Image (cartoon, rainbow, N blue to C red; front, side, top):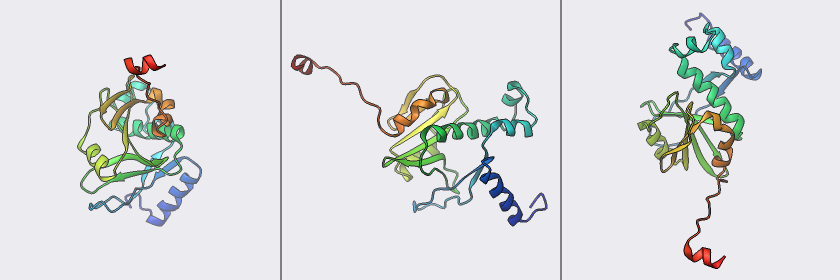
Length: 189
């Protein structure tokens, strides 16, 4: 409306950009959790380079100093996660009370959440706790720009974007625990 265009015109162009894979419309997840949920899609430019060009950001320093750096990182990381995990459907989740989750999907019956943080040491937020409980998540991964994968909580893992290729195995539950040899099992082998 601020551009003087009708909702129908905006939706037509948005659908065109989505159909040409320039834009991702991430639909909201709805379920009856007793809270008012956000119902509008989240819109991302799928190529962060286009976003940077539109924002006139030509180098890393300009990007890191820009107020949209977090949004740029979120869009980029979401595209990388979806390309790696390849869920059949993906959503975001948000409530009018402010709780939100950047990505929600179900793989092999596991309810999975991804939160994207542009931080060197991501911490658990109230939104993450709410999403874990309200969506009955089996696990939540915090994708961040750091270098190390580590458990943040029993069902929350910080996962560096640089290791995104390993995320599908974790999501699908195929990470094998090492068999610990106890004196009893060692003597029987």
